[in-house]
Length: 216
Image 1 (cartoon, rainbow, N blue to C red):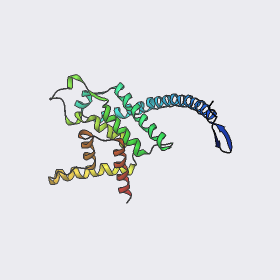
Image 2: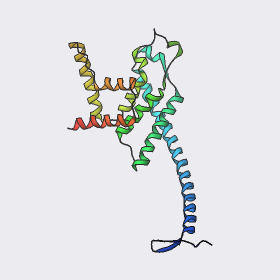
Image 3: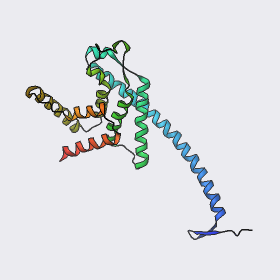
Image 4: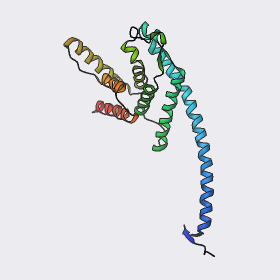
């Protein structure tokens, strides 16, 4: 017969077999608690998703009203793709909160992950009758990228937003009057979204560096 082994834990002598039973019991309780937390978190994320969808739809209507008539007639907002983009955004944000122990995500992260998922899912779709070389313009082809920046920039500090827009206006003006081909921060960012692979973390770093440069 095997002799029972014991360990001294916090001044108490406990057998190996009792410890193993305690571990199994504790893991069972913890698993059930985590399942309950996951269910509550999923409900929270979906509630946030519906609210953010509503906000983005209002942003889209305002954004579309500023476009040309051709663009307004050529596109529509796909509700299913918008929902996936918005849900993915909150999944990312909640993962960040879980690992960092933070209650809130910074506005840099909110801006970055909003842009990331709107670009990934491209919820603004082109109507079939406009899907031809004659009707398609650069504004239509890039409309998801531009709209993603509009939604993302809404989270940024107002001074940072103004810096981006003013720099673009100044460079565009100089390019036109002086025959230059310099690219603004906005156009470089648009180029990155259009042609390069990027992550939410990279966009966060870009926005943080931009604000840091503004404050120096």
